[in-house]
Amino acid sequence: MTKEEILELSKKVCKNTLMETLEIEFTEVGDDYLIAKMPVSPRVHQPDGVLHGGASVALAESVGSMASYVFLNTEDFFIRGIEISANHLKSIAEGFVFAKASFVHKGRTTQLWEIRITDEEENLISIVKLTTIALPKKK
Image (cartoon, rainbow, N blue to C red; front, side, top):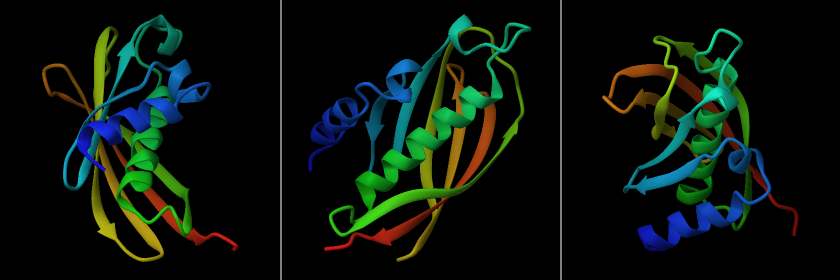
C-alpha cells in the first residue's frame, strides 16, 4: 500500500471506536514508523486540568496496534497487545500530542514497540513500551 492508502485505511478503521472518541488521527507513516496526533482538551484531562495518563496510554496503544496492523502480516495473523507500560515525564494542558511508534524488536511471534509521545514543540511527554503478539488465524 502507498502511504496515502495506509493513512486512509487508518482513518476508516477508527470509525465508531475509542480512537474516534479521543479524536486520534494518523498523520504520517514511514518505512518503519507510524505517527498519530490527539488533541489535548478537557475531554482528555484528569481533574486538575492536565492530560490524563490513561488517555496517553490509549493513544500509545492505538498507534502501536495500528503500526502492527500496517507492518505485520495481518492476513494470516491477529495482532494483540499483551503488555504496555508508560512513564509520564511532563504534563500538558492544551494543544496536541503526537505519538510515534517504532519497532524495537520485530519477531515472528512477539514484537516490541517504543512509542514516544511529544508535544508540538517536541518535548517528551511520555515514553511507552508496547509488546504485541501475532496469533495465527484459524482457517
